[in-house]
Image (cartoon, one colour):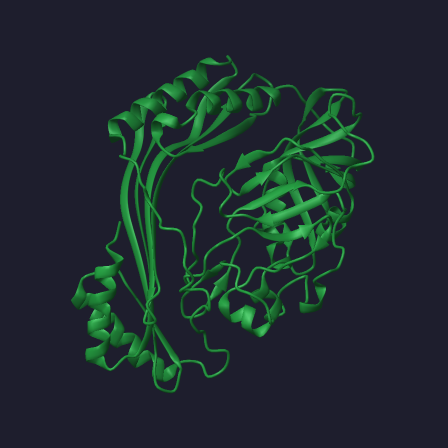
Length: 446
């Protein structure tokens, strides 16, 4: 890990020479190795080391200047301090960012959670075997056009002139497999799977192969669907994708900028079915990339966003919390303008449902596995969406793949129309969620 104490002493000495009394620095370094394969051969091998260091300086008039660097050497940091000092003369006069009131709060000592990275040759061998196993799982699977196996080491730190010192380091490995079918007289069908773990030896490659194969094969026998209103079940990935597309609901900076479906007065309103609870939980054990502090040095924590259908909290930086008379939540990223974003959504059941629902007994239900075109089919400030999807129509446990269809609706109505939240969660890149049942949505067939 970065020796943050030595770094602080060097920066403090340079700041004193430059006549700077107030500053802070946030830095992150990610070392990554990744491989891709195609038809039994290595297709692409990447190794990268990305560093980003943000330096902020306040002048005597308390306006702030910002600069970025990749140089952690004393001379490089001194030059960055000087540049930020000069930029502070042109800083904004209103709502000037400040230190987080929690940047110096005592936190548990962070241990170095990095693990040794496996050789690139082992990555290639492992992914080639996974591709081979996936191709051999069914005669119709002829291609694995998208795949990747990667290892990442991350190192983060924060310090400021008041003596705040934060640092953490961790590792994780991930694999992605996306297989495609070719059958005479039929359209190609495809599906994928994703797994993550602390290290390559712990990565469930076989489970990823099995999941990708089962999903892909389940789409082989597809049928057209009649347009109309249907009960809809969102997979974990689909529901979290939709939740992320409308994250302005919880984002305090969006609310202050009037770029949100919420207002400062929305807290306490019932915005969803009482069956639904949603939290931002970066410290959840399933979040292997979890961060213990944000870009302002604020400790992260579990933030209840929706509790039994009621909007209970917003996500804050130090600045938005001050303006809205709240507490920082550890969701800030520093820069010329501080931004706010979620870490790791955790969706779970709230109030008990009137009856338990199951795909084994349900009739004429649409199961949406994956939503597409979230960047284009969502109007986040209106609440509406119209999105193509991959999924099945389910009748008493029998799943029939849908050839082509689009789901449309208003996200606020979706939240209020939830009729069941299953108990078994699934881990995805965007968070943890069970399947979520919605009373009725418009489905348009091809």
